[in-house]
Length: 111
Image (tube, rainbow, N blue to C red):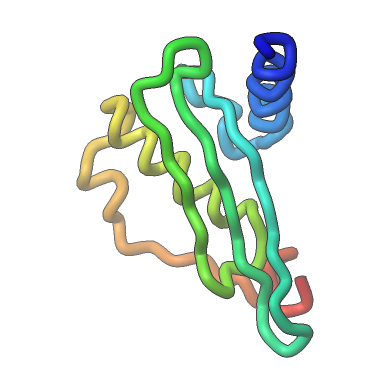
């Protein structure tokens, strides 16, 4: 049914519109986030599935970062992949060698 199909796509577009990760991305992305908890003793798994452009997809991606704390980390990865794919960043800009300390953020182990 096209009504249901359109509702799914609209919902996936709305998910990404509420993610600050994609705020300045010039191409409309649609997707779904997720965080899967496996154990209380380990960080959650970070998930994101999506595609772009939202109205005429050229790329689709499914990401799972094992023990990646939360879906926001998967979104950051997808943002970088899409920036590279759509030539918004160069390889040098993406591979800058800088890491983020998650120990002092909302992505720390208690997630």
